Each structure stands twice: as structure tokens, then as C-alpha cells.
Image 1 (tube, rainbow, N blue to C red):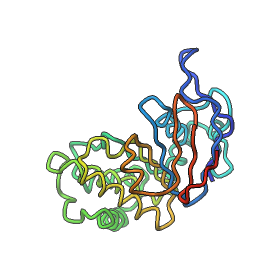
Image 2 (cartoon, one colour):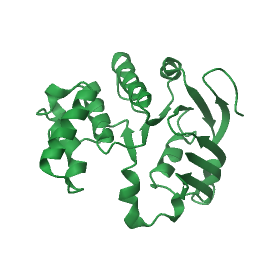
Image 3 (cartoon, rainbow, N blue to C red):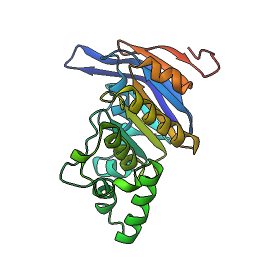
Length: 227
């Protein structure tokens, strides 16, 4: 369970990125965050990976107040959460396989287990044959699928996708969203931040609309409004 309780985030004394946010997301939900640039979507996501903390209010994940998590515990927290970004954030000097394996290597996972796990997630994203390719040898859609594989490697409970289709064409955008849908169907909570309503309509799940740091609409799949 994810819970935002009266969360406000203020920068530089006057700019309010989040304004008194109250929100609950249940385990296994697929939630789309929509709104224009500057609406607060990315700030909300950064709260969940403890890249930001609230100016006031609480962000609760599995009964833990994230503001109280020690800096030394943040890497362990982030293993519960897979993050995907618009700009892929792949390491250019490493192959696709090595990009996915890197998070396991720094965690001290044995090499044979790494090989098995990486090949499994590359299969899930449909890129089993691309493990030896470097990012420069991959299309934009393939790069994003490698980024998704990397996000999956720790078997996270939550996937956070912040504008994951922003650098992709329409065909690759739909492929990425279908993959997120597939991941959600196996029980992973997915939070998708996007300004593309066509993508959201394709997903046809719960939609939270944000403007100027506030939630202005929260609509479930069957059309019912939560607020």
C-alpha cells in the first residue's frame, strides 16, 4: 500500500510542486498520473524513491514513513521499486546484458544466478537476442525495454515509469505500455506518469489527473470518481 497524507513539497521558499496531496494506491494497481509539464507528477514519483522528501505531510510505503528511512537504508528500499525514465539512463560502455546485470553485481549476487535472472528478464521484454549489443546499437524502443528489464531485475513490488514513452514514436510507445500492462498482470503495482492521454486511454485503468501540484481528478477504470 502506498499512501500520501497531506503531502506538500515547496522549493526555494515559494514554488509549490505538490500541494496537500492525499492519495492511496493499493498493491497490484495500475495507476496513470496525467497532467502537463510542471503538474507535479515527477515530484510525486521522486517521493517514492526517496529522491525527495515532503516539506510537510507523510509518504507511507508498506507502513514505513519514507522520511524516516536512513540514508544507509535507501538502497534497500529502492530494491522494492523499479524506476523507468524518459532518457533510459543506460550505461553506454556496457552491453544490454551488463546494464541489466549491474544492479545484481553491486549487490553481490553470484555470477551464475545473475546470468539466469538477466536472461529471464530479457526474455520477458522480448530482447533475449540483444544481450551482447551496446546501447548505441539499439533502437529507442529497445533501449527502453532494456531499461524496463533493469527495473525488473530485483523483482520489485512497484514499477515507477516517469514519461517512459517521451522519446519514442507511436508504435514503440504502445509496445512499452503493453509491456507495463503485462508486468502489472503478474501482480506488480505500476505507476505511469505521462502527458499523453492516448497512451492512458489504451491502458484503461485508474487515472489521476494533476494540475499545479494538486490532484484535480481521480477516476477508476469503471468511470467512478474517487474525488
